[in-house]
Amino acid sequence: MHICFLTNEYPKAGFPHGGVGSFVKTIAEALVKNGEQVTIVGLNYSALNEIEEQNGITIVRLKRSKIKGFAWIYNFRAIAKTLSNLHQKNPIHIVEGSELSFAFLPKINGIKYIIRLHGGHHFFAEAEKRNVNWWKGFQEKRSFKNADAFIAVSNYVKSHTAKYLSYHNRPVEIIYYPINDEHFKPQNIGTDDTNITFAGTICEKKGVRQLIQAFPLVKEKFPTAILHLYGRDWFFSNGSSYINLLQKNELPKLSDWSNDIIFHGVVSYQEIPLTYAKATVCVFPSHMETLGLVAPEAMAMEKAVVFTKLGPGPEVITDGETGLLCNPHNPIDIANKIIYILQNPHKSYEMGKKARVSVLKQFEITTLVSRNISFYNRLL
Image (cartoon, rainbow, N blue to C red; front, side, top):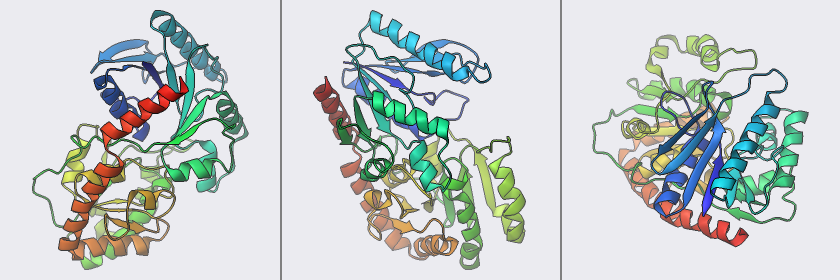
């Protein structure tokens, strides 16, 4: 079977990528090991057309159009032409993309088009209490209409998306993100007793501001605590930096403690396990997630994790058993959960052990890749 993933986020050395890129890399490599052929098609970070082979995967990165107002037309055309050429040389069976992928992509006979629900515009607009952009909303509805089937990465994203968009009576399968438990596994290295670690995009919806507001309450109990923030910056429409906003508005309130909040910047996929390994507690107080990769990744490393109680949080963590769930809008609650873990190292150790067992049951890569292949075959 020849499977083609559409994504601009496939990891590339020297460039940032998000959870979708990590997911596609994980599943693509597992599919290739299973004997499937995998091609990645997306827009490049640089102004070049590039093709490379990596771990048996063909990665096609297309030059991104910069024609103001019409770039989307040329980008869709470039992707469509690439898919057509690939299909003529070696027939494609499955094309998979995220919510907006198929809005203006002409369909090729014999190929099944699948949307994997990573969290679309309607989903996050509601969660972030902002209006739906008419243009993005139109594209998302058109893309859903063109899809042959859907894969939801959690029960929550399936049910919540259905409030705003129709699946048009087409197949919808719930399949969690797979976690590479060989990449994310316990490491026997020395850790500080009060290392608090966050990983993800530094932005409002990830709860970073509330985590910083919670930090002084933690420092009152644990003066040696350090908050480590790993991830790329997020930029507003005017080009201003979210990190700069936090440094201007939030850090001055912390007095001398602001020096104990460290922004490390982007961390590669290869390096991220080491950041978790150093942590005493990993904290991800997202306002909303479709599932979230960072929590189960850290759990797979037997780390005590504080995750959001909203959305799919309870699908990932059994509160008090495999981790703790917090109210991501309440800095006091976030602080209390961190303090509990720091005050109870034995309980933290037990939760970490149970967390990895839970991840191996829910997110085990071989089982979930087999489920993906079975779903593809049913469609074909």
